[in-house]
Amino acid sequence: MKTISAAALFIFFLFSVSNAAKEPVLDTDDEPLRSDVEYYIVSTIPGAGVGGLDLASSSEIFCPKFVIQQRFSNGRPVFFRPVDTNDPVVYVSTDVNIRFIGIDALCRAVPTWSVGNYDPSAGQWWITTGGDVGNPGPQTLSNWFKIEKAGSGYRLRFCPSVCDSCVSLCNEIDRFFL
Image (tube, rainbow, N blue to C red; front, side, top):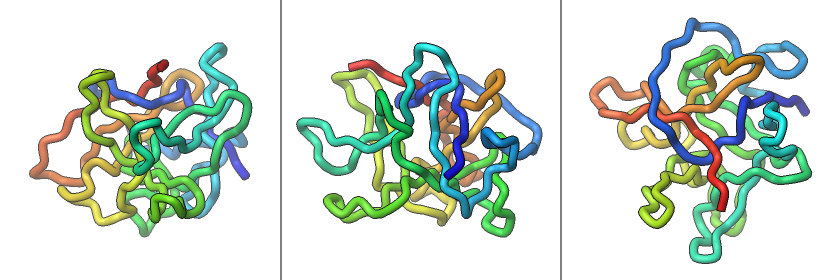
């Protein structure tokens, strides 16, 4: 199992825009991320939490699951699937699907990340599961994320570029305390 260090835990969005050169995302062993390897996403920011990412249900919504940060474990491993399936390397600022390992039997779905519907009570869009892997285009726009450089680590963003004719907001993924 490999680990990718994230610059912060990421669950909701803040608006921003950026560009990065095509360079590989590196894991904690300074090896390029690959689509065929399991990784844990953990925080590198002191005080941001010591755990990795996992799935959870809310008291009102059982499916889809929400992406959360565990307090004292590495969380669940993920696969990254680049939009370019001919190249298994994951590059900075390129579209990727993020999928937790395994099947969510209760929701009968592969736990692929997606941007859920806007929650007016919290004033946020939540990262949920239920997304589709692959098939870049308008129907899968909410399932594509980017990994951006952030100091000595990386930050996750929602800024899909898989559909030239689609209008999309570019938002950093951040955490929200309940």
